[in-house]
Length: 268
Length: 346
Image (cartoon, rainbow over all chains, first blue to last red; front, side, top):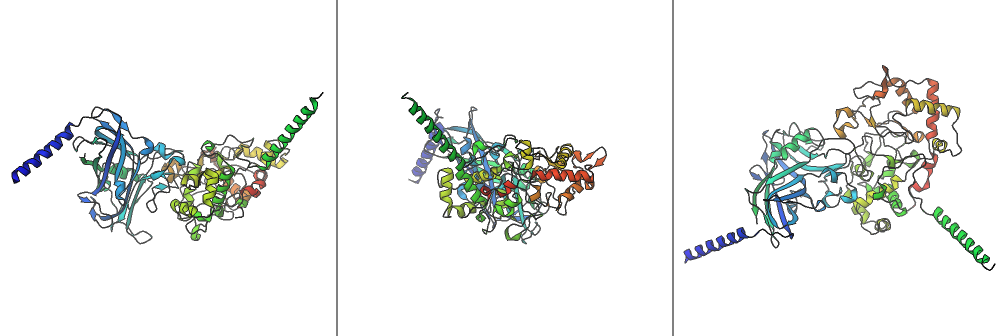
């Protein structure tokens, strides 16, 4: 009896899997939801705000109190090379570790099987210089309180913001041993300045191709390893650089964090 | 024959209609006007049509202390009309909780012709400019989000936003557009110089004319007419101050920009002392003495100030007096007393 149950279960599972596999790729223009999950981790550990402790390559122990970054300009491509660009007005997202829902970026794309995904970490220069009436939602400079993602003194968005506590950081005027990494820079408007806009391209073949169909929601589960912001081409030391904002050094931080995204799996 | 009375009546009616119309126009709001001796403005007026309701809302916001964290500091506190919208008498300004800034409050005038804002040019659109003082720790120390909340809860603002923008919705963009409408309207083009240039019945005295000639030879390469700035960033050799303010460098991270500041306009100098980015000179005599004999050589010193193996600008004592006489023709009393630009009774 037990065997029959197990066999039946296996058969059902196989059939379901087969049914999914054989699901024909629709050739219509019906749109459906594609979800992209930004699961923030620190090396081998899940990121836990304030409570989790981590160590970087410089040997410094730290906790993270705030993590926010912009994801924008999302594009997907099918195996046969058909690219779909999510309309720009619906393609700006602010991922915040403190806000669970923000970690699922949902876009409407045509039904299809997508083998690659790309997005911008940050805000493109065009939108960064657009009339203020075009900066709504997460791009409204009033967004966020302590987590404000806009520089008023040097017009532009903060693309990536991570703050935390580490004994390695010198005491700031308030007595806290805090590190602050606020990275932005879209290339400048009136004069050419640094450009920290990063375009991230991810191949989805190995981790599982999202089969976007109406009536269900494919979820591309990305791991975002913020330890890579510290450990990379330049190993960032909190003691040496506790505060990185609009400076040449921020280019090194941005080059590091550009590699923090990896595709773990896809839930179809 | 019988037609004539009708014609007379028609002419009369047309005449009366025209009169009543022109009377209306005079009483009505006069929007933005480009002075005849000015170039076309660069502010994007097409994205922000100036209306009476928008201008008046902007004016109210400009004088609104709720823009600051504890409702004590308004834009008008450091940008005082009688001082051509500077903080007259203050080298640097004191903002919220009497915290001191590190730079001299620049005048707010003729901003419609500016391509960048702030002494370091860090802001490239007038609509984004107010965010800087509102969120600055030593100025207003407030968040935009909280300002919007306060305005939404205010008994007057929702109706004023409706009047200006068609609905009671209060957004960042609408608040900024209204502030821009007010600031763009702050046009100073009523000085004696302007009247001479526009041939409105004024003429320079002999000293003023001599000063004007000297100005054109020795100053106008940076302080270009008619705005008296070419909007560029330059190091004028005053040397780093005690706080080593590097000017435009932190904005561009280009070492060639170290110690460069935006060339200020020379309009309304009588009302805007002290001078320079940190207000270090209290008189125009001091400023001219700097240019003739105190310019310091630095790697980024403007090339115009080290020509022919000499630092600075050569001017005799008599020539300085003539230059001062000319500069005095750039003061615009009508601008600093124009009631449209003043804080209105509640």
